Amino acid sequence: MAHTDMDADVVVAGAGPTGLMLACELRLAGADVTVVERLAERTGESRAGGMHSRTLEVLDQRGILDRFLAAGELQPVGHFSGLYLEFDESESRHPYPLMILQSDIERLLEERAAELGVRVRRSAEVSGIRQDEAGVTVELRTGDTGTAALRARYLVGCDGGRSTVRRLAGIGFPGTEATMTALIGDVELPGLTEDYIWVRRRAGGDYSAIAFEPGWYRVITSEYDRVVDRDEPVTFEQLRESLVRLAGTDYGMHSPRWVSRFNDAARQAASYRQGRVLLAGDAAHIHFPAGGQGLNMGVQDAVNLGWKLASVVRGRAPEALLDSYHAERHPVGERVLHNTRAQSALARPGAQTDALREVFGSLMVFDDVNRHLRSMLTALDIRYPVGGDHPLAGRRVPDADLKTSDGATRVYELLHAARPVLLDLCGDGGTAAVAGGWAGRVDLVRAHSEDDGWSVPGVGEIPVPAALLVRPDGHVAWAVSPGDGPGTAALREALTTWCGPARRG
Image 1 (cartoon, rainbow, N blue to C red):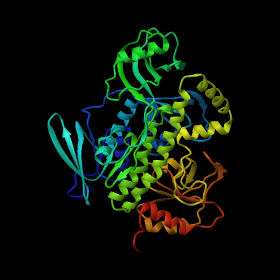
Image 2: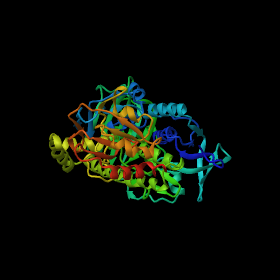
Image 3: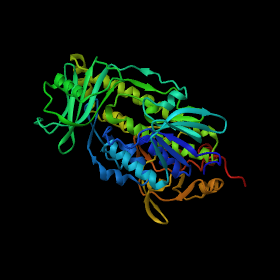
């Protein structure tokens, strides 16, 4: 619970997918959290349009994936800069992207947050931050003239690419400037004679028109070497004019539901933490939305940070645990910025780029190339620097089928409570003896896997481990192979690092 002089353990600024997912993670781990959002209500704008495999896995880890599957549609293909990728069903239970609009994602996450007791305070915009040794005071602008303040142990800025929290915390946002302008809108296209248009390239850029619901389309135009000031208002007429320039027609577009603008500027926060202020999602990184990685990376930021921050505010782990958030997620953000810059370059118009795309596309038919790009976009190959030489150390745990004394289960079902799981698959008792010092903080599960091996993206098939420690975010903190001995000293070190010191006595 929050300290007596605190309004919450954690204030989360921003009620988008990242902020809501973080709030849910914090509540699952027992932290008291308030979300503040400057908007009076959800916009209902479609915005981002999909979730990749790793995001679907983390929702499965929390037992809420079915809600999202019911609201979207699985697609058996993906792309790298418009060049098609194929997926491998052996890599995940959820190998295919889920096409689901951001408006539905936010609605489902807000419903989940309400179930968990998260307070969402709307029409409340962060206007000031004051940190001290005990906590942070968050000053709010409420309504037209009102003000308020909240006191919390920590503040997390999930308030988008123009993050007020990041600016007030004095965190730098270095990166590369835009080289193009893209417009996006949800409109009706009565003059479109095709079912859809997928990345049709022209001299000045490219355009697409894809139906998300019967009767209306998402139109995207991208024009290179045409940069517009980010503060210039965006209009439906600008989208129409851009489409005419590229396609020669506007297909009779009308009735816009939503119009917006983006570009290929790529920036990343110099630090994801400054004292008691942390950043996640677009507040920590912006990039060209190629491959649909932005929303997914934000949700995964939240799942990495939530259990760590809750452990600290609940007194289960030292504050140093928070340093691992930047150490683990900043390199992930760097890699996404890198690959989206490459995708932006591959999308530029011109004969040279056309030739490069043809050569690049011919390489993508090779399994190793396809697998590398696929794993990068889906985030299935991420490996955090947790130490240890086991091939699973730092990687996300496969969702293997297991048998326990209570019956059949699978690994991700063991993570619904968002607690660390010490999985004993050999039953020699060594792990149980070590785990006693962390009773109440770590779930010890004895189980049996009938698989001959586990498939791990980026590694291949590996022997089923004898035991492993799985963090709440689904990444393996420690593992030992059959025949390698108990590894109790390394297990104690891993438990201390990720779950705090052992209980005295």
